[in-house]
Length: 219
Image (tube, rainbow, N blue to C red; front, side, top):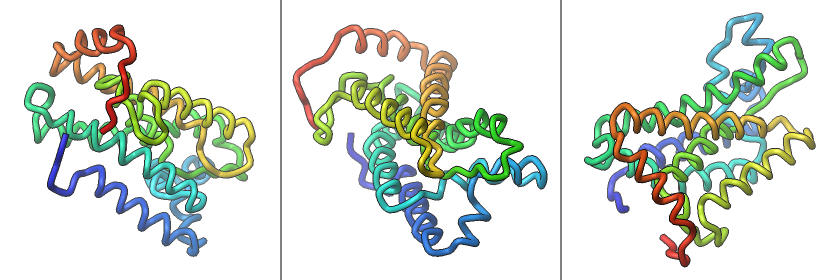
C-alpha cells in the first residue's frame, strides 16, 4: 500500500516526537502532562489520560514506540481508508478514534489501581501502539517484517512478553501494563467496526488466520 501524502500516522509520530523531546529537558512540562492518577482524582485533570501518550522516558523508549506506531499504523490507516472497508473519510475518523481511544482506555485500569498512590506516575504511547499492532493482525496476521524478521502475529506476541517483563520489573515510569489493555481495545474496536460497517471483513480475517504462515514477503 502506498500513500504520497502526509498520513495521520506520520503526523502523530512527528507531534509525539516533538513533545517528548521538549519534555526530556523540561521537568515542569513533564510533570504537567504525565499520567498521575492522584492529580486526576483530586483535581479533575482528566487530560492526563491523553497527554501522557505524548511523553516518553528516554530516546530509546520514544524510538521503539514510534517505530512500532509507524510500521503498523501506516498499514492500518491505509487499510481503514480502502473503499471496501471504511472509505477515506470514515477511515481517517475511525483511525484517530482507534489510536487516541487506546491511549485513554489503556490507562483506566491503572488509574483505579493507583488513584490513591501519590508516588505513581506513568508515561508513553504504549496503549496506542499496542492497539495498532493488534489492529494490523486482523488485516494481515501472517504479514512479514524485515526487522525483526517475523510475521506480525509473532511480533505482537513478543511485544506483549516484553511489556509483561518490564511491567513486573517496575524500574521506570513507563506504562508497560497499558500494552495489554491497548491490545484488547485495538482488537475489539476493529472487530466491532467491521461488524457494524464492513461485515465481510470478519470472515476474511478468519480465513487469513487459519491459512497459516507463508514464506516471507517483506514490505
